[in-house]
Length: 95
Length: 495
Image 1 (tube, rainbow over the protein chains, first blue to last red):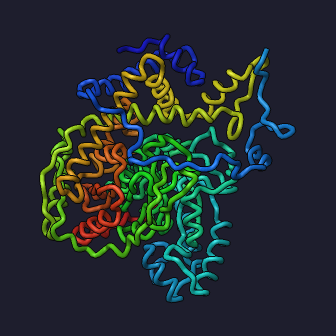
Image 2 (image 1 turned 180 degrees about the vertical axis):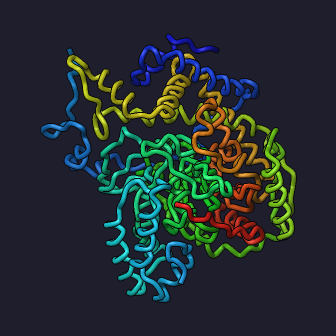
Image 3 (image 1 turned 60 degrees about the vertical axis):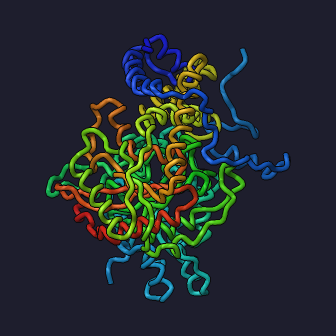
């Protein structure tokens, strides 16, 4: 499997990271090095092996579906790059 | 009296309780040492005001006779831990200016025990790196040098600032985190001790997430006893971390008897890597001999899927990272890019993440995005998770066959020079974690401790891997090895 610049551009788009056009060939090459390394996994016989979901066999604990630490609007907005009137502010989303 | 900053936790605790020293004095000694060690670039955020207030409170508590072991002990805290009101940016520009409104569970546990925070420590950006060269603060530097050669060496990574600070006696101990070797590799590179406990032992709540199924916090200390004391203070069951284990935390220090007679130590043949430097082989052989002389049985074992651990890791860790780091979008905290006229929300995301993330982080997020993308999820991500199950089974099998602990080298080499790996492809850097990454994939406890030096006078470390939840037994085996190795060297001060 080889990654070309078009695939690299697609991955960058999916990851929401702006990559300049002239950087794409180098990025594709790095992906290919890493994926070439990962390809070794194809040598392993994984027939009948369940993909691991949790390293410790444990059932996740449940709790009541209630608010535990609510009413902290100020704290939640304290680090926002742009907060207005109790909300996070972002550029226009809907045309 | 020796310089107070060079004390170990146990020594300081005993002196504090006897009234021979105060936490305020210990704290000032460390702050002075930090001030004089700018060249190491270990501490990146100063919290001396908090430290002095905590020290004063600790002294009151000690006077009142209510003093847990960590009370009054000055520590460095890795920048990955969220500390309330204090910059916590995971060495990333994308978290520039971020001051959490909350405290991580591990630091809260330490503060509840009376520990003192001197400052925040350098690290690789989002803990992605093995040399502390991906940090937005610049490189942390290893206090050790190759004899009289002035080449600046890496303290390892990702907990490079923690390792440098403890090794140079800027603090009594430090917190670290370990996703693929980030406590153990830097500990080995700097001649200190570092333990990654069993997955679920320390709460991950409030620790900036890298790969959630692998991340664990642990102590980085001057010896095994200190590791036992500090680990106990860091561990707890925490309802805020759904993978935190609800079991009692034992008194690890009380388990340090040094008696390992009859213990079975496994030597995995697959760790005998091709081209392993002679000095590493020799160190490993010496370690075997020491444990044998202490009464342990040395047994050759096989962990057949070892070879596939790194490739599996470089699917699973980036996959989880791409998901975890999706939260850095320029909306809720940290950096937001300046936008051009007409830019919408997608441009805001893309520009913010391109400016805020460093190169290695971008690469891993994109690799993770790729292996999780439609059409490749099964071929890469699910296959890696299957291989991970086999790697864990390798360990389950040897433990079921009666092995108590496994002895391996901690790293494939001594500390290398900063910049020496820059030209190499990313995979060459990843190989630093070849001996440590299996332990994260299997969720096991692992400890690195210094047992020798190479010809250039650099420290070398061995790793012991234990059964899940048996950190006490593992620490005791490490204690026996430490006693036998008698490593006491310190870097000569040049900074």
